[in-house]
Amino acid sequence: MAFGLSPKYITELPAGELSGNHFLVLLLEAAKQLNWNIGHTSEYGFVAYTKFSMSSWAEEVTVNIEGDHAALKSECTGNQMMDWGKNKRNIESLEAAFAELRTQLTDESLDQKYDELKQSLALEEAESAGAPPTATKGKLTSVLSVFWPTQGYFVTPIIINLNIAVFALMVISGVNFMLPDTESLLQWGANLRSLTLQGEYWRLLTCCFLHIGILHLLFNMYALVYIGLLLEPYLGKLRFAAAYLLTGIAASTVSLWMHEQTVSAGASGAIFGMYGVFVALLTTNIIDKSVRKAMMSSILVFVVYNLANGVKAGIDNAAHIGGLVSGFAIGYLFYPSLKNPDRTDLKFGSVAGVALAVLVGSFMVCTRVPNTMAKYEAKMRAFVSMENMALEVYHMPKTTSRDSLKMEIKDRGLYYWNEMIKMLDDLDRQELPDELHARNRSLIYYCELRIKSYNFIYKAVDEDTDKYKDSIQAYNEKIQNVINGLKGK
Image (cartoon, rainbow, N blue to C red; front, side, top):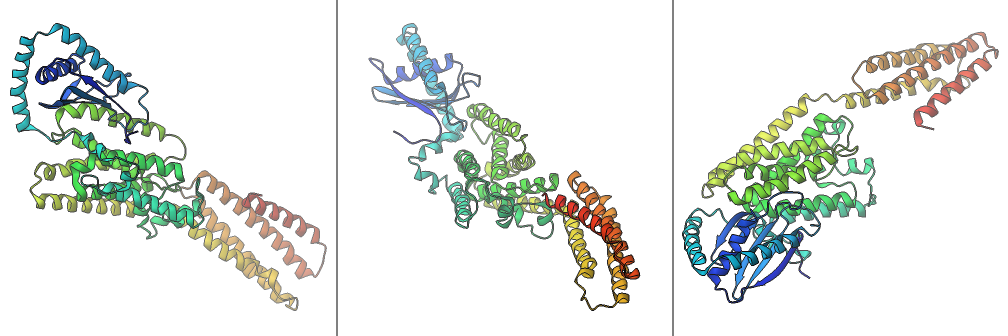
């Protein structure tokens, strides 16, 4: 069984008594009769693309004439894992059209069409845009070849291996294989506004190499292999690596801007960025015009489907959109250097310019995004500190004088409980998630209960009596109920 990334169907068609020239013409005319887009053509075969429809997703059909037969192959241009028989139907349609034309066209008409074909082949040779984007897929001859750098597919396997290595290290360290918890993801460098904006800007990049479970990793790496095979041969090593890293940073920045509490991790933002680069190139003449429509259709299906799927809870669509848009822009910015491959100054200049734009833009966004959660967490740390000081009254020695105890209750305990209420009132006026506003109200109620309890304690100490014992106990029970509610008990 042959190994391949995309679903395909391969068979042979015998030439019979036909000459090689007539054989080629008949197959080419059959493809045209099926209204396929004809791509690269030579004296030994051609590449065609089926029309995009419900029954066909713009598959690539390759015809290679090899002596007394033609090797026919239909392969998906998209990154679908199953073709549901589409490729076999394409070949059967081609064979049927070929058989029909064989009975209709005379030798004279075939000779005439071949003469016309030779003239167009000479013109095409002069204007050739190179091999079709799917050509690199043939380099994957085994499962291991996915991870091995080769010419035209060099940076992609390195990125894949890095992602897998990071995930393996996470699992070895004890992180859950299927669903890592939030704390583990943050420890390994996931993106979260409150942490990233406090100087941990490296999270914008490290989160692009983290994954939330093995399934998340596998799906992302499959998509990366596919776009890497298509795009890296055009961009080359430097531009491809730069595009991946920079669109990843841009995607993380957009996620940080859009989400205050979302913990973001995964390569999907950068992968969407690479799809954005490819979409941009498909609108230029860098890629042969016969290929553009077929590839554009399959790429847009992938993008639209995954963006629609990203509406689900738990999926960071902001990162997807950020990566896609930044990749689209980067694709156009790389275009001048791709159009002039001999100009190394253009290549390095475009990479440097794009890197500067993305890094400066990301920094400007980060400096303007309000870090409300970090401020909230700082206030909560101050709350805990004041709470500890207010509770010191419970830790005073039994030999403490009545006046010292009264002073501790009034000037330290009651003072700090009132200060905490002021701080919480101010914090509650900030733009916070609803659950934090609810938590603030619970904390305010907790402080109010403490104040009432302390007032009774003060009276008990001042009057040296036990008559307030039941009231103090009642408030302490209410206080404990609030504490349990805050802890989720």
